View 1 (cartoon, helix red, strand yellow):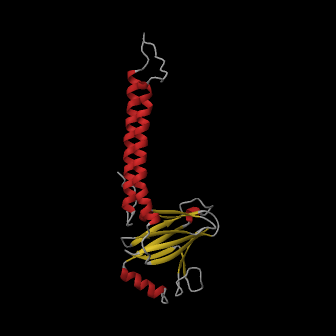
View 2 (cartoon, helix red, strand yellow):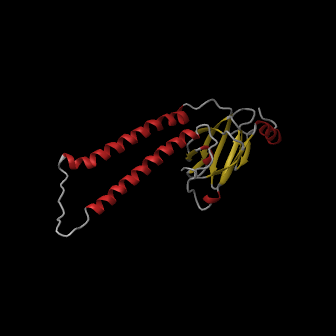
View 3 (cartoon, helix red, strand yellow):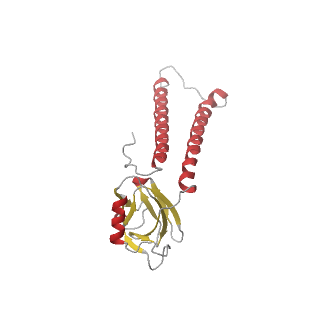
Amino acid sequence: MLSWLPENISTYGGDIDSLMYHIYYITGVWFFLTYGVIIVFLLRYRRQEGQKAAYVRGDSLTQAGWLLVPLLIVLALDLWIDFQGSEVWAKIKIDAPSSDLLVGVTGKQFNWEIAYPGPDGKLGTADDLEMENELHVPVNKVVHVVLRSKDVIHSFFLPNLRLKQDVMPGRTIEAWFEATKPGRYPLPCAELCGFGHSGMEGSLIVHSLDEYEKWVQKNWPHKP
């Protein structure tokens, strides 16, 4: 039922999709249950000749139960989703694995600036390899991304990797991913950032290990 989601090529994408499935099914069942009850009540308690409407004050325990029971069920389901979500959050945001590749990504109106550290291993120095709108990474390797913005709020979005992170001016924000399938995937800005926002779309190119080494030799011969 969630076939509208883009193909997942992330090591943690399945965890996020699982949460989405739970939320989707719970809200779907609750939606049809609620509207089903409303329709039944509309038919059963519709206006009829010789029958007066009852004034319900809601001050008896039975009447209050119509509010309290659904409230407790919704609260329990919400806490259950929060509990599952906290494990996924910790996996993605707190317990990040060691990095195989470090990349800097800076948003600006209306491009993504991509930077790979040179021989000194530091971003923002003269030996960086700089590109625009193309993020090249090897498959099955952990990539740490250092995110910055030059002007306004952007949102670094890799839908196939289930990674979406706002990029704030004046702040350095780190994220990570591990792609599991070679190919070219979209890298749009998911935050309305100005008149050229719709054109701010780069690409994530996931190479096989051999292809990545060839790309490095061609574009980055002084890679440390």
